[in-house]
Length: 527
Image (cartoon, rainbow, N blue to C red; front, side, top):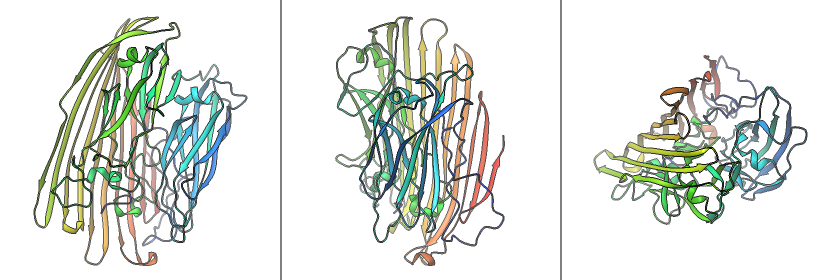
């Protein structure tokens, strides 16, 4: 029934500066504040800049926009930063929609849209896309799609413009360190440069499309009576394989789109974390670089474990980011370690009256290691990753009460050893969800929910920390409305709040937002 459905420093939403209102309305009206989030904007260098328009389109159906990209003139071809900006507007009535943007076949943005007011809204998304510089140095085809349906009922035409701003490199702002090659995984096999010395795969994994995988965290196995079924229950894992061997595991982020949990009034102003800028899952595949360097095509495959056989609902576009050894034509080496724990996937169904319950948990661990003989000596890379999840799902027959409390962990350690002290990068991520939807006898639907996106990162050179950060992005909302009546009789009310805290060796950012009935009532910066 709950349908409708790098650090995160690259997203800023809202048509302009946020201003808090003194007196919010008693209920939602026909218009509300433009969407915004507490996340920080992309930091921009003080350097010469050049801008190009990447796409400009109105989306009414499922026809992609197709155009072309030409690199800018006057800012060189080695940039200190490249910033993508999407400006959108829509009015009327419309569902939340999922979209993508490809440049030269490479996915550079995956996004979703806010649901509009009758009077119309505007929003924008900014993203640091400097890592895609190798693609942007030459002319490329562009494809963008935000699949949409416009008819007599759903009238919202999604109008977007996407630009790229290039910041030139100079003495004060040197050229950014980027991959040497970016390869979209658009075929069954891929051939990488033979002098590859580092490989990172990024997967824009999203459960979407209107089916049950859009809210996979609520799925239950037989014989539990529920509207969304899956043999594995709610446990999901994004896996990547190289030539059939498991090379990486990851926990998917439990994205909530702006129609999620049957209550768009939760998300009209402040979206759930990552909803407008879907961050890719990343895998360090450097232990497999020696295998990939043999000049032959290799199978690199991505799949989501836990999805019922033959069932759609997940999108996993993938890019390979490749760093090359400029001092070698061919880099050789070998895979020296591959250790995998037995995956744990357990569900326990407890029938009852008036409440039914499903407890689920999962665990999995993978360690890979390999060496490369580079022009600067032998380099060994060891990658250890562990994922786990636990959730409690409670509901009543008819699903008039539906509640989930879940937590997902994704811990990774990458150690690189060669000349000098080893360097270890550790990332510990935790995602949380705690929500309840109830429908009263009077048809009043209420959802109260909290969401968390947290990460702790540290880089060690030997035993000495050289960089660290802590991220805590927390959303809380509570909204209600009357079902099965005309829009003007819904008498919807709702509050939402987000606090985004990011601090570490690079400084501090802390901002909080609060809304009441679609009106912004608080916008405070704490640092």
